[in-house]
Length: 332
Ligand SMILES: *Cc1c(COP(=O)(O)O)cnc(C)c1O
Image 1 (cartoon, rainbow, N blue to C red):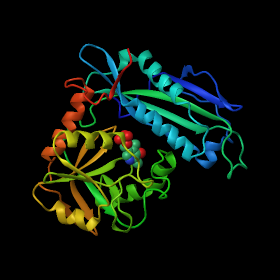
Image 2 (image 1 turned 60 degrees about the vertical axis):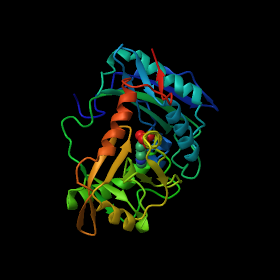
Image 3 (image 1 turned 180 degrees about the horizontal axis):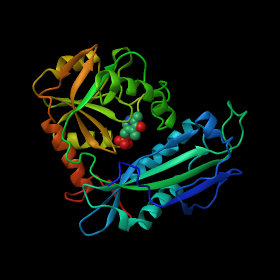
């Protein structure tokens, strides 16, 4: 199987916003896009995206995991970026129509179909630095993906970085390429300098999240994670894991988490840490790196509760256990 997200299927679904309204979405080849070189997005980063997955069940039917949440978040990101207002019903239908069209290409678990909606400002207006794009393009790509953890059970090494931040504080909840561009330099530096897999951004000692995933800490019967504000992405996986943790009887605490508390508690034998996001579901963290020192989290191996929560989520997605929170939407 190709690297995650590189095998993009040959058709997308695309809708344009012009003259104050959305045109009917159409299927089109997914290997090109007609765009004026002066398009707003190419100069002023008027762009946001989503990432969600479709799963094939044993009987062949295909389900999308919590698409309503992603559609809502895309509408919110678009609003915060002053892109044209997304028609949520239209986007929902674009996603389900495209997945239905490629239903035969949705792999069996642990594989899935990764779905990538994108919204970009398309108006050719290079003097429009301080005005929004009057027109836009909204399209959806799909890409069959394999198990993110194929054969690799190693835990992640995470650099705790107290200077700088991932994104501007009011932009963290916007799923926008601009935030990724802003975090890329520090992440590559952390890889080169510390062999870190990711950075956990902790401006002024307050834990936020990594470049593309939310952070979750477990110790004893408590699951701790930062409460939602504008500085972090409101992850659908985060929300799902917190719900499942409550189902399992864990005490879920959403609060401000400091680096001091994190390092102090990570030394306990039952400490666990993980990153949550659609691509990897729940990825275990084994080591923190802070001020040139390394800290092993608990045993340094995948935590038992992390493993359980991940398994529960994956079992719901693949249809092995009952979907009692009604997260799956059938497409065919
Ligand atoms: C997409 C993303 C996440 C994870 O969100 P999910 O909805 O769980 O996939 C977390 N942090 C950032 C910065 C993201 O872009």
